[in-house]
Image (tube, rainbow, N blue to C red; front, side, top):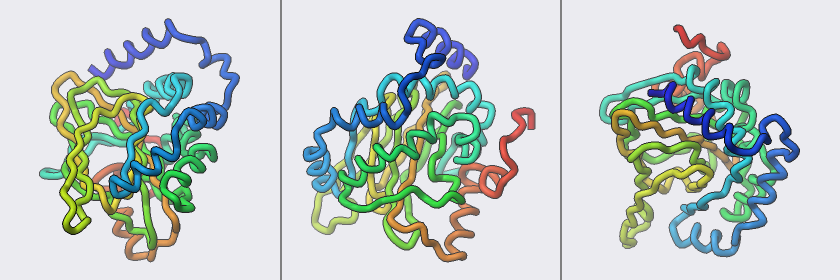
Length: 268
């Protein structure tokens, strides 16, 4: 099923532009062009009105998504699958591996044009997460029947605020991102959203405020999403760092993905 999806990517992209071999624009240049098309004042209003949550449809240019697609055959064998009953089932790839084999993905995370855009929307001097955070830019895969994520907050173990930026990669599924807004605003009615993560779409939110989940994929469906994390402070006390690392090792990337060891052997 996954092999068929990858074959489809190759066939589809073969009929499109040849930019993968003649790439003339840097990721940062392409992000700059995308930023200029946005109504930032309106996005700022939405972000504030929705208690630090905003959706930016069709943000990533097709040229960037084509580069991401070219990395997918290398990413899939690196997926670490996990199952936590009552909470989640699926697969993921940690930052170091993504950086090694899918540089077009981490180039978006490191884009100064993107960072400036996000700072203006949230009105804060957010920064990239520290280099030892495997979640700073990670690849999530929902490829088997029942893969899902239960409702949760992206609780920050850092000493200040943390934001999640979900970026749509490929979605050939009936799965949906469910978001409950205003859950911590006393007296405010909870707003419930159901979103399909279309390619290039951004969903930006304060992880401590938005209660969210991913509904299960069905047999034969696939869903790939990139998660990026930003903070105002990279400080975390040693105990919280240990707890965060163990959570990531058990629930997401495995010991190799969190504590080192490089790319995994797909045969293992």
